[in-house]
Amino acid sequence: MDSWSSSNPPAREPRAAVTVHDGRQPPGEDAEQLRFIIITGLSGAGKSYAIRCFEDMGYYCVDNLPATLIPTFAELCAHSTRRIRRIALGVDVRAGEYLTPIPEVLAELRARGYATEIVFLEASEETLVRRYHETRRRHPLGSTLLEGIRAERQLLAELRELADRVIDSSHITVHQLKQMLVELYGEQTPRTGLNVNLVSFGYKFGIPYDADLVFDCRFLPNPFFVEGLKAQDGRSPEVRRFIFDHPEGREFVGRVRDLLAYLLPRYQREGKAHLTVAVGCTGGRHRSVALIEELREFVEAQGLPLTVTHRDVDRDA
Image (cartoon, rainbow, N blue to C red):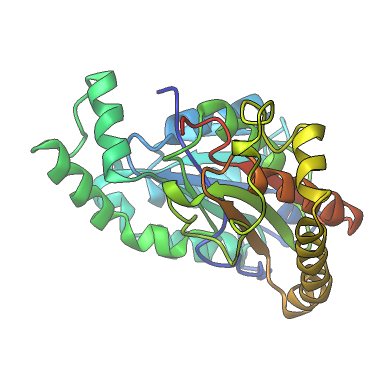
């Protein structure tokens, strides 16, 4: 599977961990350091690849451990001589009846004081069908391919609702997926504060479904129709100069910066964990990319955790 997509933004904000002394795992420094990332999602959306990425980042990875064994496994990790502190667990429909107790298991892990997060990977039906045809694999739920995909989506609906982060891999490459996971989870300690995701996109390919704020910049002069700029993208100095030499370009990015300067501290104060800001133009290659690069500099100056995704910059027009 070579080409996919992703946006980032969470279906729900992460719940605060509650430390409870239950007689099995005493609260304290070890409990706070233990971190669980549960990776789940639709077959073909990139779950297995994501687990390998976490393994490369130094996480202790286990795929398809029955949910009822997770609390015992967590206790073993907490007391291991290897000091296992970062764990990634793969969970999918192959678990069958063991999917049912996942909500209770999550509540138990959080009650013990373990930092726990669910990452859910999904993709469009069209993308999943294409990937299965490319790999010639059977869907784990059997039946026809489409019926299997739809049945799996329904079976995992509750897990998706519980997810702290939903990643749509329909339009990104595996390399982009890895870069995103490394940026989000590659640090030794969990990120704190508001995580900002800046996304450029093309309206012809659809608006990112998970965007919190969407800005349309199609009114700006289009470098696509300028000789010498069409083959470049919004990351090039020439394209950015063309856009921001126009008064409308300078004014627009300034107004968006002013709005973010107003909103970001208020979102932080409210306790929001993730914010996805999307900027769109026609094809997602020139104007939206240049604007996102300008906003990148602004957000970095605020000292906030940041992910930048140019979703459609390498797609054919």
